[in-house]
Image 1: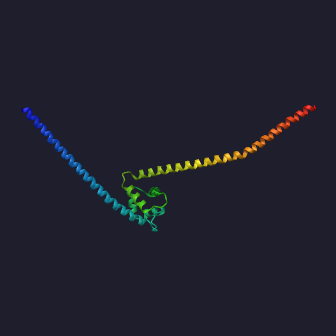
Image 2: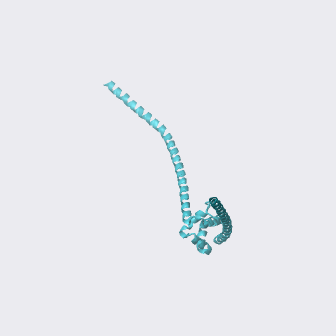
Image 3: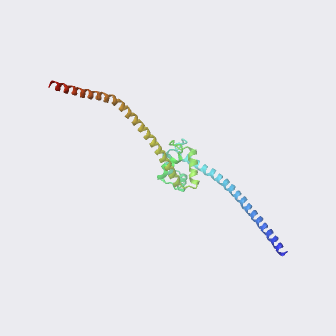
Length: 202
């Protein structure tokens, strides 16, 4: 009887422990879920605040008020606008990197940066886990790949044009070759005929 009682007691104890563990796990899961939601809300608030600041920086850099930034304005703004200079320092970008930064921000390659392009690109570069240097390397590799494709396309067109011109030149030369061949054939025949006449006279 004692063994049965002890066994029942241990089973009950293990059941209670499992119940306690389940409650603790559920509590942590709920807490984590709330923490994720809280962090998401905080990130959303911070994103709005930082994008608002970036929008203000954009208009300070835009000297002529055209609503678009040129590279010269971006370069000038890095020295003239304090907030923009601070933002660049946080991202570890110096004067030598400004050209590449402009090309990254100018997503459509128009040569001018629109407000939305500036705000979105600068925010992503500052807040993503990837370092700025990684962004630059990725942009450089992409640009080199595009340039390589353009060079290949240009080379293909050049070779096609060269082939076409060569074929045309050969077509123009072919009739002349036929005339030359006929002339040589006639000359050879004439020489043989003349030789036979001389032998006949002898």
